Length: 319
Ligand code: CUA
Image 1 (cartoon, rainbow, N blue to C red):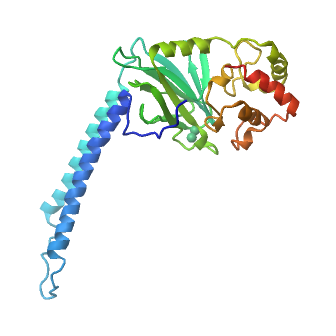
Image 2 (cartoon, helix red, strand yellow; image 1 turned 30 degrees about the vertical axis):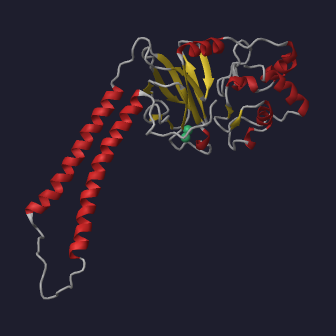
Image 3 (cartoon, rainbow, N blue to C red; image 1 turned 45 degrees about the horizontal axis):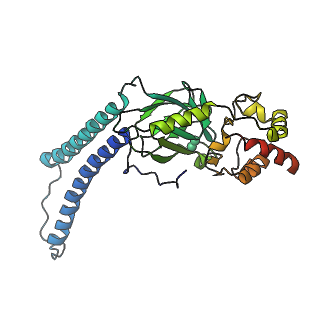
């Protein structure tokens, strides 16, 4: 994974994000114009009249109740607000009304406290926290349509360079689509306060060239090859409570409360950005996830060092 970039709405790479940047420039231009006019009059008044000696004998012009002036400062702001409303509505409509084309990739993202489940329903892939999609470049458009669900509380899906923010709400299905034009890694973050570890809900979107994406799909669809050296660890894993929360495809582990571990080692971080996914960190994570992510729903497994070593020897084969 390339170094984490700063999410920036002014550096869009995907169709909805381009529209959002354009809209923010329109709004910015209008508000800057208003600021300059108001600020300009204020400055002019200060400079022109500020130094005059006050003459208590002469009363300033009394304009209280002037219908013209009241109309002017009521109608002008209303017009400005109406224009902003119409322009914004047009952009929102343009983004939300795009029909899903036949060739679009479909993904379901499920918000959990505090990680993201990523499902590819048509490809049979389930992963976590890292979304992989194909690029839409000069060779054609392969947009990704994302269905958003939550199993617990309200979260918010936001990858600023790819699309606008969309709430992820229990018992409601929301949708968002992206059409990244440039290969790269784009980061996002849960954007709705959802509990203790709201800050550790990192989202990573990796945009691949098409052939590279197909290769990623093929790898994810395979189950990891069984290695004889990993057998003691695999048996230990199957004997522990791990399998009631985690799935490893092709094994008895079929829990759904925690992230799918079939290709655990293909992911860059543990705990949705809590720590880099290295064997050492993974070992410490299994020993006590709370050390990295207080409040994580995965319990400390209370394994001794020998058991941890065995388990690790198995987990690192899940590539
Ligand atoms: Cu999930 Cu904030």
